[in-house]
Image (cartoon, rainbow, N blue to C red):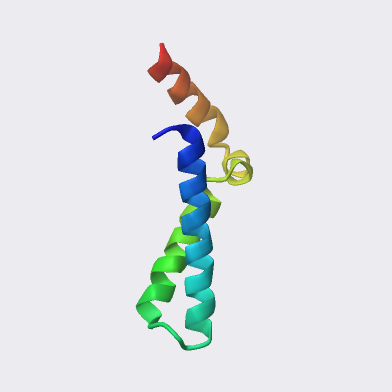
Length: 70
C-alpha cells in the first residue's frame, strides 16, 4: 500500500470515527463504540507532528528512522 492510499485510509477512518462519536452522543450507537472512537482519535492526535514536538518525540523518531534507512 503506497503512502497516498495510507493517508486516504486514515482520512476515511477519521471520518468514520467522528461519525461514530456524533452517533453515540445522540444515543444512536452503544457506548462501546464511543470508547473505541475516542481511543482512535486520541491515538491520531498523539501521532500528530505537533504532539511529537510538544513531547520531544520528534527527534527520537527521526533518529530511529535514519537508523532504519541506513
